[in-house]
Length: 398
Figure 1 (tube, rainbow, N blue to C red):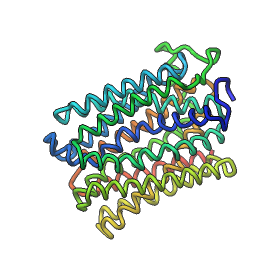
Figure 2 (cartoon, rainbow, N blue to C red):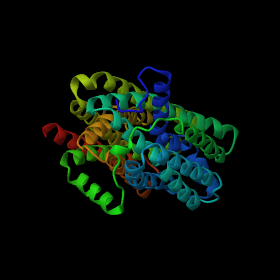
Figure 3 (spheres, rainbow, N blue to C red):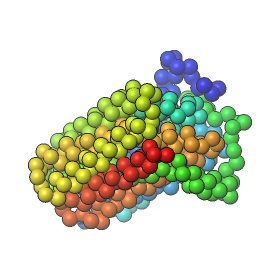
Figure 4 (cartoon, rainbow, N blue to C red):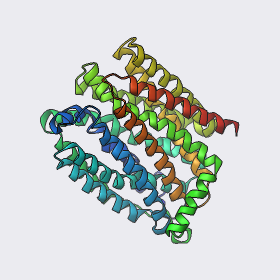
């Protein structure tokens, strides 16, 4: 282990892993909590059909580009100080969302919120790679993702309960409180990147570093597998509130329960991956997950197009697609980071930019093609699953 990492099994070590879990969960925490309120927000803010999907797309745009800033900065300054700064920017953005009075304001503040939150995911991954090799990093990522999955598991349920007793603004004030507590927790973490391993972060070397990463075929193949899959993930996230609540007439509370079931499936997949990856390897587990995503994405599109089975068929198909995240993300991230030897922060940032940039595209397309039915969501999920499988198979052959 690198100097500064708390010994495994100690109270300090468990605290370290718990804070990393929260940081990895920032993207989910920031979005899942307010998903049940989307229809109510659209009504209160006078937003037209498909408009509030852009609160997700705008967030993902900020999340993607923010990581390109935080990653190289952490390679130069260490991980901890940029983490604290990022979380405080997240707090400011959350407060702005709560004070918004129209759809465009909240979209803008969601971008600010994401620019801060992106530091958590990019730098938590880099901290794991600072300390562990590929298969062990994949195992640890799966374990942490299982722990942090409690956030999206509980998020819609908590959001629905807040909405039942208070306004949608209270959800964003809750995120302000979460951000302040997380910033305080990050100040207690040890630094995982010692000064002798840091590199310059001037604009020229940063851009050259990103160019070199994009020339690394192994890195790109893993990143493409993540990117395609996350286009489907966020098409699912953006589309299901309207498909379940508006189209099929479910209550926000029942929607939250179905969303929680998907996250529970993701947790189970992460547990299975953590147990098998050191035996079977990251590539086999990645191909298995991408195969499941392609099959379930096609099933979602089929149900959305034909109406066969209604919500009783659509929800299980979407559940299976979301669950495959447990086999895809940790293995693809660990594989991509294992293909580089320096500038791990920049590499993690570029993966995140591709991941959430693709998610932005997926969620935006759901809004652009919104027609009051689940079909746009299903079609995008099918294409995303097939693309992820094609990239994973290329990795397997290579």
